[in-house]
Length: 544
Image 1: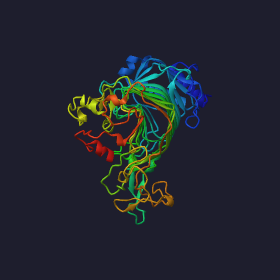
Image 2: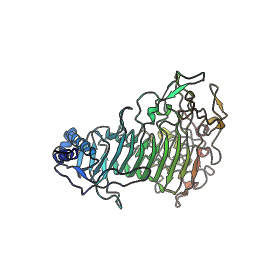
Image 3: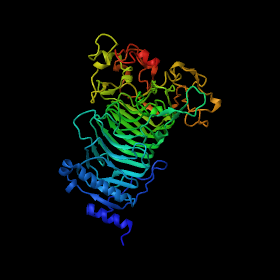
Image 4: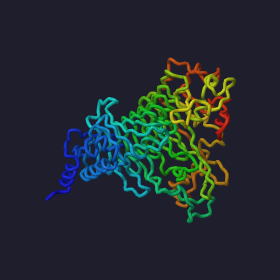
């Protein structure tokens, strides 16, 4: 009689005709973030032949995709490995089952035929938790060169498309490693970690509330988030400035190591968009927030920043930046900004205010390397308020004074944003200055006694009432009514480019300090008027 395992082995033999253990190897354990639970037994090998040949998979991608999915499901039953041999494959979306490792030979090209390639733990709030999943290359994982990676190709000549190479939802204990992203300025993150929410609003009225100005219940499905993940040795090219090689909207116990990006942003720690359409940030300050995130050796070339921090309405805890964080010809190396807290025009608008990062440390070394200052680095509207005056005058924007129109700056590769030039290694524009977070009205810090519109008083610190989903009083589920204190400790050795005098990039005397390694919101340059949009000048930007 065939056992369950023998049936799986027979099935995968029929799929591939090959069973081997020569390739199997996990990236390895990362205590607290990922534990390998998969055997090193290869249950199926997919070759670049037949239905999965380059030609056949391009003309009928569903057939090869189904073959891979069937192999993964069979291997999942016995916690085994599926290997994809070197070649070029065109594939539809692959839903990864739990308890499986997918190993892809280096230099294999996986071309996307749909807007998502690998997907797990995301089913509209109904997914079972996806567990024990790894996507990596074949062969040993130590002492590997940058070329020892598989490639995901967005497979489009059109820029700014919706392309997510990997989407991770309600998942725990997963790893993605040794991947290169061949992007084309997509308008979504290439690796996207996001809550498996139910698609409903983040906040609803609480019919059981008792005589409070706002009685609401936050949608707990936004806590169905990725947890315990290790993402390492990942690179990307042609990354759009508003997006990233990797962006978790939410996550706990996530470790990102040796992530590199060309253009755009490498790792973007920003929950949601902060726009009025953002349901995640309406779900209270803690559902779907970041907790225990490590960013180890993150780098960027020619983009806006290697690391981007923005909390919107979430309270985020214990973010650690370590190793060598590097930007080569990037506008900044690290950018930390205030969150956006939009006002929604419905009865459940409970006065959302800015969230914050707490217990966040920049350590190791931050290096800014500059070899090209001629308007080649990516920039955002916020970053443009720090652009050097002389440099702006040398563009077509304005040849006579320091005012300029950002919309006349050169466009970036996506066509949706602009090109600037390197400005500083670190920008902490969540704070007015090193010692002053800003005007009380800006609400970038805690003011427990502050009373705001609607006469909703924030709790006192002594009351131990957070008035969110963590409150002991289930009827008191109003959002805290004060803004976020940033707690960013800078212990790093920050290296402005030793060969570049930043003041010669076009800064007028007194604009900023020569080779100042950290700039703050006060360093936005007066006279930077962009003639359009909700914030029209540097002075207004500073006041926000």
